[in-house]
Structure formats: structure tokens, C-alpha cells
Image (tube, rainbow, N blue to C red; front, side, top):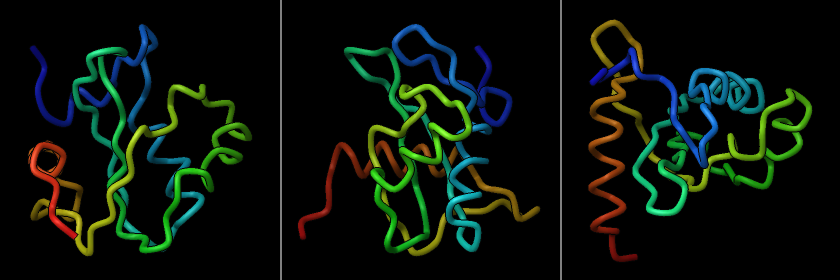
Length: 114
């Protein structure tokens, strides 16, 4: 099993999705903010993509046209969007995907009461 940064692909409904490609498109739409894409288990499709972003006005519907323009499959569109003030980073300044995924799984299993 490959863990961590090396596994930057998700298998959604049988299709391999490059998480780096999805992040690249999102970074082009909202360039001034940090974003991370992680995959989590999905009982119907195998995995689903979750977008974690620091952009406070982010909405998934704003990404649809950008994904079409870049030729990404509709399966590449994140199924969920989570807005955080600060995405965890490694000492190198890169996104800490292990921590992001852990926090996403915690947030989904125990959503904050608003």
C-alpha cells in the first residue's frame, strides 16, 4: 500500500483522478488562497474528493466551468467542500496531506454544531 504524498490519485467510479491536476485547476480559479484535495472512502463510488480551501467565498458551482475548460471529467469535481481558515502545512511550506485527510475524516464523522 502506498501512503502519503505518493498516492495523489483517487479512484472514483472506476476512473483514476489526479488530485494534483484537480488542485492545479482550483489554484487557477482562486490563486491567492491555499487549497488541498483529499480522497475519502465512498460506499457507492469507491472514493470521493473533498476540497479543503482557505477561500471564504468558495462554492463548488463556481468550479464547474473551469473543470470543463480544462477537460477534466465531471468525476473530478469535488463531492464536498470544506472551508478552513488555515490548511496544515509541513515545515517545507507544502500542504500536510496526512493531517488534512485526518482532520477531514474527523470533521465528516463529527460535524461541528453551528
